[in-house]
Image 1: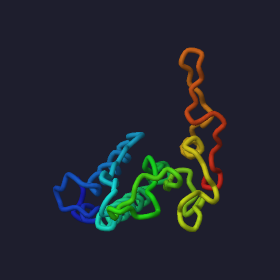
Image 2: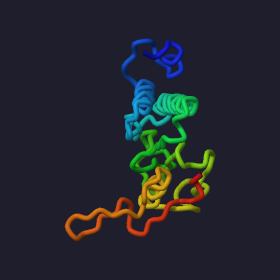
Image 3: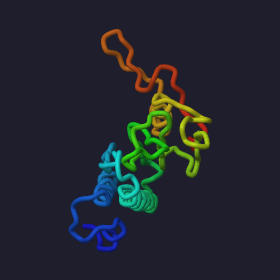
Image 4: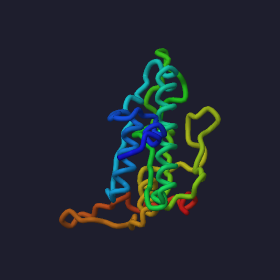
Length: 182
């Protein structure tokens, strides 16, 4: 039911049914249909070798598809009630390895939050000059998830219980990063 122009906008040929652009288009349609949680995955970021060649494709694909998705959601009035999160389980080394790649790096990594409850264009934290450590605004997963929950209007301090054992939805005591919240 999509127009040829919409397919082209997402970088797709009519009838295409694969790729990251396709996943983003399907995600938009699922959001329109009221699906409360949609996951889109862009695989193969594990560039331990040939980082530069690999990222020419990966970054162009991610940048294009995500920007089109965000614009499309905004134009349809869906971005204000949709939180778009871009993250991975860790960052990549700031230095290139002998295989011309970048390895796993937990010292500093980035996440983007867009839409629902987030101040557009806000930035929180920064690394030192060579990207080795977080110089300002270091947070943990608990604070990230407390921020996500607050943006979505969910009580970030809520606990569930397994028997008598409390299980928080974010870490005990984790507070949201109010600087990025609208």
